Amino acid sequence: MLRIHFSAEDLGRIRLATGPDPAWEALLSLHVLGGPDIDVELRRWRTHVRTSIDTAARPLLHLVPPRGYSPDFLTPAEGTTDPEAAVDTILSTSHVRLRTDVATLGQQRRLPSWAAALASGLPAARRGLGTALRRYHRQALHPYWTQISASVDAERALRAKAFLAGGTDRLLSGLHPTVQWRAPVLQVSYPEDRDVHLQGRGLRLVPSYFCRGRPIALRDGALSPVLVYPVNRGIDSLRPGGAVGRASALDRLLGRTRAATLATIAEVENATGNEIARRLAISPASVSEHATVLRDAGLIHSLRVRNTMRHTLTPLGTELLDGRAARPSDTAEQGDADGAAGALAPSTR
Image (cartoon, rainbow, N blue to C red; front, top):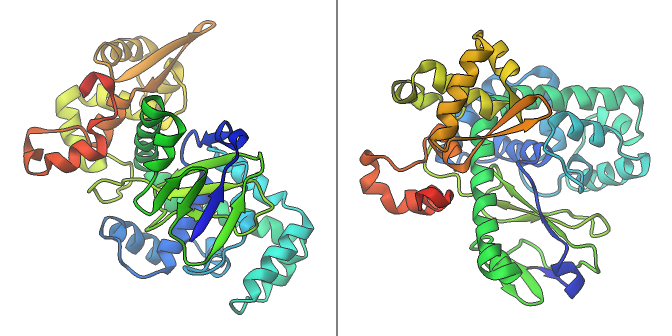
């Protein structure tokens, strides 16, 4: 059992990640890649990545075993939603932290010869780690990031709703079936017995697509406290592009260019009209027209910053693009649909 002890000050310092954390998704997806094939919805992803993983990324499989300890420095406690920033933070890890974490890993498994160079913080070893992380994210995560982000955003919306309805008690009590909130202690079903006293540091909550079974925390209690927990992935397999499997249906619903505009807004953070126009090879005036229709339908938000209009998806737009909004053919699975996505956008509940 993992017991996280809160003070009154800690309850006011609970933070929810603003999106999927690329460092945690990389580490936990590596667990899936090297572990038993038990996730039906991840089977296609796992098979594809295992058979095509870049040679430069393969060392990560030795650094991140599917069970037991994984180096804490691979998941910086402060977190970020930017993959490149995550890699930069990992590569800036102190020599002491590298040496400590690699030594801890070496206590449970035999390490390859290059691990000693990494533990020493040699520049070449750090560069090699950076290359491995970037290649892995580009191949194993980036093509699926739209669907991963949509699932995490859906969970964030549910947590926000819980907090508004019942404060921190409702927020913490509904995190996951393996979690119990017995104020002032959050109890998590865990493979080892451990107590974490927050002592005014607060707790960062990170919903994760690749987290399986139960939540996970950093081994080193001296680091900024974080609890990573599984999101509800729904019933769909992980596919490149998130909604690729339904692209033709979405094209018929919205029109090909308008559907592509919606997908581009999902891929590009705070997308501008010029950026969308460049990616789709259409005129800015056409982008403006499509954005107006999407905005009027409640699928996107648009915000003018100086002379530039920036667009983001609404929860309803995310549901539609990710294929989770209720459809007439879903009647046999309506209960699951309601639980996974039906309560995400106030205008549709």
